[in-house]
Length: 133
Image 1 (cartoon, one colour):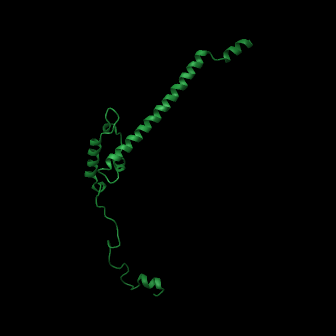
Image 2 (image 1 turned 90 degrees about the vertical axis):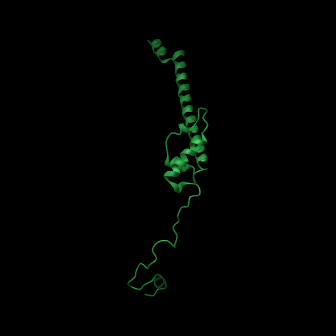
Image 3 (image 1 turned 60 degrees about the vertical axis):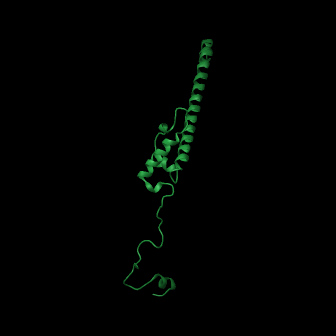
């Protein structure tokens, strides 16, 4: 009886080999996933770099046109600059303020309302700050 119990607790060489293959397979899958993520990050950065020739910030292409960039990558894995530029120009047509060198209005003190807010009491900010009413 004790002999059968010990033999059932032992793993056979086949079982150990299968376990090793499963472990190696899982490690390979994890490495593949990490490499795919790294490749995706590199493609995204390259797309943004090329788009920065057309856009003020190349990452605007990533933000406003998210998705899969496989159509911008050739069969060798290189980013096609012409396609990226085409997409960037399309984005500029939709949002002209994103173009490189686009004039973006900045708020300043000279813009907006010019009349005094309180037009009836005669109290001004300078009199309030000086302590006079």
